[in-house]
Length: 304
Image (tube, rainbow, N blue to C red):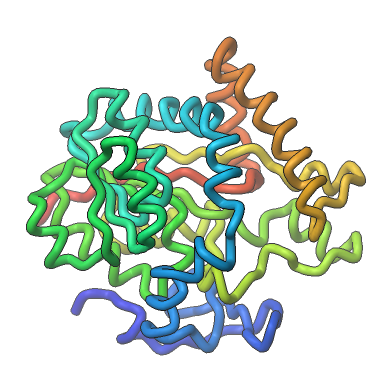
């Protein structure tokens, strides 16, 4: 039987409770998630309309301000995919504003996005990019053929059944195909320090937005459990270091954008002029378990 959220018994100690939801250290899943989970209907409504239109009304404005930095980051990631993928056809599930597939097109890849938000899909199409405006389904994906890479870029944290999606992804990957995952690195050492020793509430726990809370260890464990060999692990800039330095951006959007701007400037200089140093830092942050998001590149194991 394929491993899915529905056929597991979810049990484990409660790590924290926020907004009426518990985050448990689930013994069955091997990663943290909220309990109880939102229903499929609630999630569909949230991501089809509410996510961009009411929950994050400044999303596209901020994305455009960040685009140069995102493109530098994404070209760095495509350099990694170039080394490991068996070909250059990529599906990006939950493609958002489409910057990742735009970078892929610039990098010489054949790219396709799946995006449930009408606003995000239109924003992407207006730049001449190929995106399917619907919630990902295996049937719809199969109509598009098979892929050398399937990208889950800031997606797994939002899903009711991340294992079920990965099982489906396996069926549309070419032999030796790559699963590319980025997700918030939650309950990291920096976050734990701030929460337990500096009187910060666990601000990264947002049950309406994030159902699952992975870290660099649990995501690698999940990939291996699902039949992938982990080839590459890195982490992004540890933005929480601003909090440790006394710049409390939690709940302060203006200060948060200011800190983010400094982070962008730092990373951009390295990616433009000292890429080897950037690569070393990304790997070192992951090894230390810090960094705001992790990046995983994993290869589908050959069928026995």
